[in-house]
Length: 145
Image 1 (cartoon, helix red, strand yellow):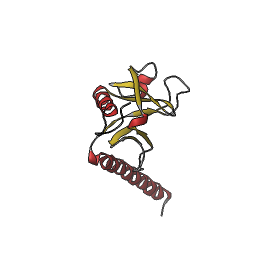
Image 2 (cartoon, rainbow, N blue to C red):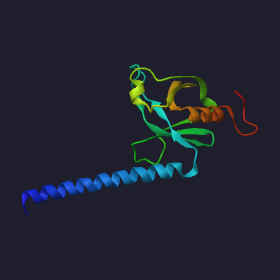
Image 3 (tube, helix red, strand yellow):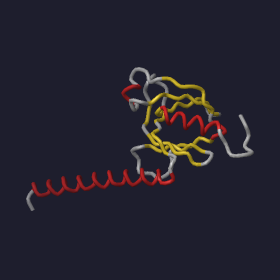
Image 4 (cartoon, rainbow, N blue to C red):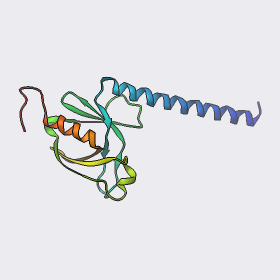
């Protein structure tokens, strides 16, 4: 077999792997959204440098918890979780500086407090309304903050 044939086979194999990866990401996204309650939710992993540290993801309400999944991951499990009782909405702001390039155009930055310290999310306006409603509500008989 000629060298160029090996190169063609390697290229075809790489393309097949890329297509399989894309299909796997789509199937995972559908699997996560099967019960509804999902929305685009970016999370600020590192806040050392102003405007940096944002990771795109998907948020899902699962009972008393907000689950966060990385958007470019094959894991079916959430990367992070926050319980409704421990997550307190503090305020919102528009993206500033380099954040405007890191986040989706219509998203706002939301600041929350947890027992482990402050966290920042980025979501759309309608998603923020849903988030505030979820954070303030609770099942009958639940403690009021």
